[in-house]
Each structure stands twice: as structure tokens, then as C-alpha cells.
Length: 360
DNA sequence: CATTCGTGGTA
DNA sequence: TTACCAAGAAT
Image (tube, rainbow, N blue to C red; front, side, top):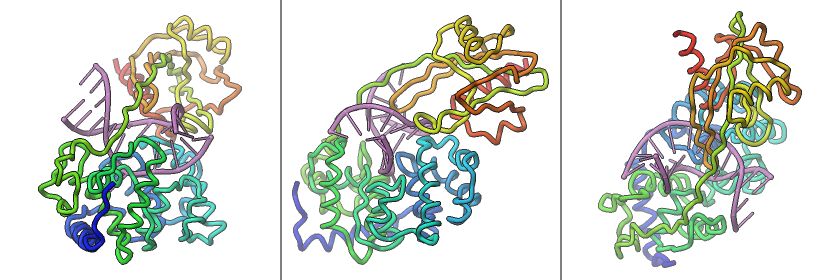
């Protein structure tokens, strides 16, 4: 790793911060520096694109304008606020942490690294982001953008896929950060990564700090950062069924409170590969006989580490209340109730297939 | 440290 | 179509 010459650090800070002040995007979480608003934005932005987050963030702030509003919300409401964003443990952890701030910190987001890092869902990046953006403290906020940008500027070859590498970049930021403009400096590194110093084909000729960049000087932009490849994911075949009765009620069940898609609702489903096996399993486990059962579609759900290949069925029964399930909460809902439950995208597609099927 | 945790966009 | 990616944290 090369270091910037000490007499150039000051110029680097000035070039970077001035560029950010001039060129930053207008984003809803930049309206003010309310620590709660900054906090929510940082949680939503974890592994999630800015364009995706914007509408979720604006609705979230309408539903829960203050820490008190969110602390008082119930689980179904917070999951509904997050429906479609992914990584649902984020909103459960945020809810737990916000309640903790209300009860233990008088509703004021703590402003020390030790205290803020104790909050659920607040890791090294988010702690640094809130402390530097909302409170002006000179703490590093190292995300994927920052590692990419600084790997190029400082010619750092450490593998950014390795957890230990983050510490290298945190130390670099501690040496570089502008103590008088911590918010702008940290956001500028990320904004530069998003707008100029992109993963492929960076716009170096538009870069405000290319004079300070080792990779630009040596033509190494495409070689950095170093990042090892991820392994490919496995596939699981599922059969899911929309059980509906003459009154229009459907059966949904709540997923466990931890693990994949925790706490979301879904149509009953099993890891079986045929209509007959689905009937057998549901007769055994749910004490319901599905006689009028037919396929309505195939849905693929791609996760980070897993793929579901779902065969969707519709089953017409006399009374959905025949369905029992010992391990999970269940609900019998009509179309007008359906919107109050948060479902994963694949099960929303199953519902769409059911609706389309009914119109034919 | 490696794996688990979503979703939609893009080359 | 495949692979990678996008303001990471918990386990």
C-alpha cells in the first residue's frame, strides 16, 4: 500500500469534499442530519441500491416519523414496511434497537462508538456512518464503495472479500479523514464509488482526485480492487399450494422468527416433487384432503445463497378451517385482507398466479 | 473465518 | 443465461 505524501493529504481532502459539496445527489436522507433518519437510511442501504431504497425510505418516514412512532409499531407493520426490500432481519434488529434507544437512552441515539455498536444491527460500517454523518465524529465508515475507491487510490491489493481486510481500510480512513468535515468526507468516498469510481469502467477523466490516485497513474483501474469469486448456489424444489374455499378465504402461514424470510407469511409449501406427494404430506401434517388440486404456475426465487424452484398449485376445498398446523401461526384471509400481510416476492407471484387463474 | 441472510438491475 | 453486483451484520 502506498501512502499519500503528507503534504498532499490536505489537498486530497479539499478536492474530495469540494467535489461532494458540488456534485452530491439530492436524496431524501440528506434533507437533514437527524440521527434517526440517518440510522434508518444506513440500515436500508446495506447491500441495497439507492434507487431501490428511495421509495421505501420515504414511506417509512411517513409511517414512522420519529423514534417513538417506530418503537410503538407492531411486528406485522414493520415487516410490511420492509416487504420486498430483503434481508428482513435488518428491520427486526432495527425495531429492537430503536426500542432500546427509547428505553435506555431517552430516545436519543447514542453518540459513542461503544454504545452505538451495542445496538442490534449496527455493525462497524453503520456505527461509523451514523457517528460521522449525524454527529461529526472522525470515525471510518468502510463499505464496499470505500474499499474499491481506496484500493485504487492507495494501490491496496488485499482481498476485499475477506472480513479482515476491512480493518486495513479503516486505518487508512483514520489517517485521511477531514476532521472538520467528517460527514462530507465519508459520504464523498461512497458517492465517488457510486458515480465515478465504479466497479467496471470507472470515469477517471471526471474524477476529482485522479491526481492523487495510484491506480490512475499506473493504469491499474481494472486490476483493483482484488476480490475473490463467490461459489455458486444450490437449488431446492418446492411445491406450494393456494388453498381456497367457496367464501374466498385462503390459507397462509407465518414463517419462523429466525432464518430465511423470518416472520414473513407464505402459502403452505413442502420440499416434494409431485402433486401426489404434496397431497400425502398435507393429509398427514395438516389433516386436510386436497381433492381438487391443480397446477397454476412455476416460479423461480433466487436468493444470495439458494434458489427455490416452486411449483404452485391451487386447491379448492369446502372449508379452509380444515387446515391445521401445529408449529406455526396460520391465518385464513380474503383478497381484501391479504394486503396487510408481508410476503416474500415468490409468494406474491403465487398469489398473482392464483388471481389470474380465477379470471379464466 | 465462512456462511447465512433478498431482491432487482445489468453486462 | 450466467455472474456479478449494492451505503453489511449476525452467527
